[in-house]
Image (cartoon, rainbow, N blue to C red; front, side, top):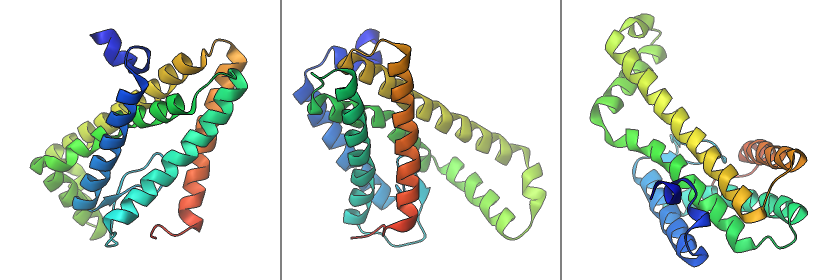
Length: 198
């Protein structure tokens, strides 16, 4: 069971994974909408001060996913000409399930209260909030949780991409890393120069 969880693309049917990936994508876009969060780029989840519609959230997230799919498919084809688009779509969609888990913190009242307390303190230049042990403990724990889930997303991206492209050599690994960096940088730049709404 653990092997299947650590590398789902090696064990599950591509169509099943695609269905799970699409449903999860739609579900977490909706969760972002109801929690007033949004996806400006491939690697960010932020609280929104703008009243985004659900379709806007869906557009933002789908845009980043589409860029990731196109880039990884191009690299995948370069590594292995038999790379299938459905497999690359699954690589991106399934790996982002770990990324979406950062949303868990939005449903824990004590975490929301501490983050709000810290934000209000810093905004009002009341830096004494930084000396509040309980607040800072919660903030540090949340930060580690977020980092852990993002690291897990990168693990799934790598292991899944390796599985579907038969990635083996060091130059191929470097090509994968370059692709991921390009995805992160390009989606970050695009978030600054194109509208976040449709």
